[in-house]
Image (cartoon, rainbow, N blue to C red; front, side):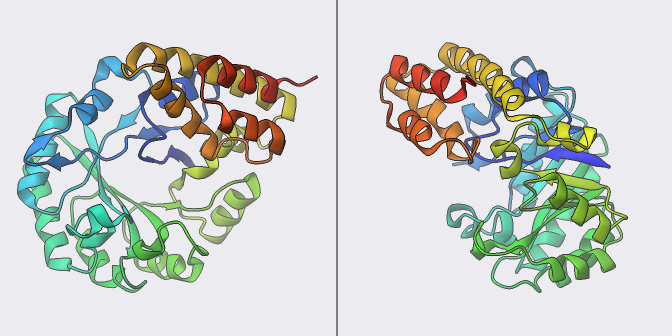
Length: 310
């Protein structure tokens, strides 16, 4: 079974990926947050994110988001220029800024546009393509017009998050919708969505034994040890987990301190985003102290106190 780290904008950036593999491990491949065209150009931040000198993980798969063959051509060209042999196409992003442009899950109601993108893939034999998608944008049946196109395409793997785009991350995952997709999918399939514990993963793999694997997103941000725990079949103790989180956090802090140019306030704001998901069962008073910190020294002290196991 393959274990993949999902791409989450603003969270799974290069410092997080590098340090996660170094401290926790257990992941077969990390996916980058999507690279996109903006006013006909690449964003400098996106290019830095995929640059080999900024990434030390053993397998990194860059993700692109596009609605036209012309956009895909530019993005695939960038990935090839940077030395990549594989790429992922985002057909799952639920956010209106993208979906309104027929990107991410916003392309799923338009199978002709999906087909045009997939036909473009034959022009890049040096790249192996996968797709990450949802069941649809407005309703959970939109995949039924898209999956036959994927089955006939050069796509090597599909990652399915069984929600619709309009849900974003709210409500329950649609296990029935996933089961229907699984039954008709002719490509290797990966499950993604609400995997937070070993039991969650076991249930998915028992329900659909022919899955290639699972992709973990928010569950891995909450418990960075989750993939390693799946591999070992047992959980870390709280003291073991907190010690490793402290090690990872310290290294991420040092990396961001080198690359963030906006001063202390921007550095603290960036570091605090980790705690949106990290260790949700932590003592509430200690978490609040982290979130209220607005100076670097008080933030680092609050983190040290929260992760100390006396």
